Image 1 (spheres, rainbow, N blue to C red):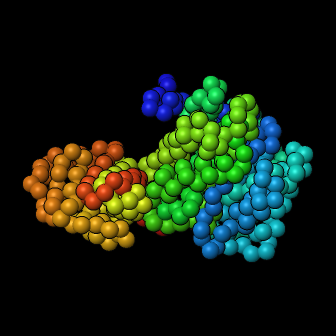
Image 2: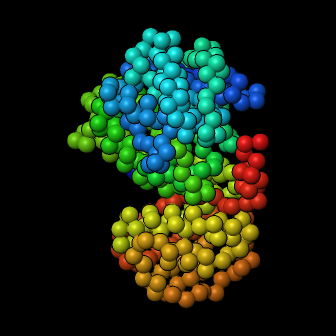
Image 3: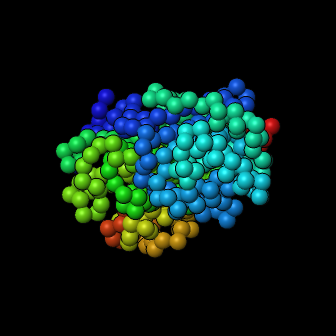
Length: 408
């Protein structure tokens, strides 16, 4: 099935994934880090690729991110990404940094690559050293395949309940360009600059600096607009590779098809971000908050994220309680400019608050609307042209159960 975004001539490829773009392979194996499940993945471009990355702003940035960032800054290119789940290799000191370098070195030697061409990522429990004999086994045994997308996607999961992938296509200079992506994330999701782990591939021709601009712009409106629990990981990273397998004039802001490429990349990021929010630990539904009429887009995004991240709003949605007062409270507590007398709030299609006062509405209909798998809250501020959207999930008893026993 192909879904067309007509205004931008972009098509969503149903069933597409991180290997849909030309010139990429991946694989995933069970190395022993997790019980019976795949826990070690490798994604590889057939040729050196332009690269862009965005990292967590946590002061406790994990060693794999430091190694990756260092390599990208030196080379401006990468060809492979190696990742393990179960152990985050965060807060592990000098030994943890050395192990991240070793992990990179083993893959580089096996595939005859410069070490700087290999990015490293880890996800899992913080504070544990990587069992390097298991990492070595993963490096030696993982096999690349054009059909290895699902093995890779399974290998990067932790508390996720499902794989997360997306794929979109557009035309650049008349040539079909594909952008694919995979991500993991379910808890500790409240990104600042990046989020969880996301990997994006494209066969477009684009230089590293231009890819970085496109990725940073896309993340601001997608991954940075989701929240599950208000927590930010030490290992958050989104990384994009463009290998130029489709020949066309190099993309940049002056290219006539730049806007199409930028929007297609944003759609991939947004699609993955919504899948993460929907798969929040213990979640039963996706919450989407749309803000229109703010004084700026930035204010709109701030308000949307504040509302969708409110524990009281999240629990009200779980309890099928149309408690608009919790939404008002979250809006008022944001750092954005708001005129209370100009604020309208809709839960699905019902106006529940307007001009500073409550509106009569059907509680029965509201409860029915809140029982849907997707819940929309619209906030209209009538103060300007700013608009923004954020995504999250409800907060359930199962979230506590999952996180109370995470290490056991």
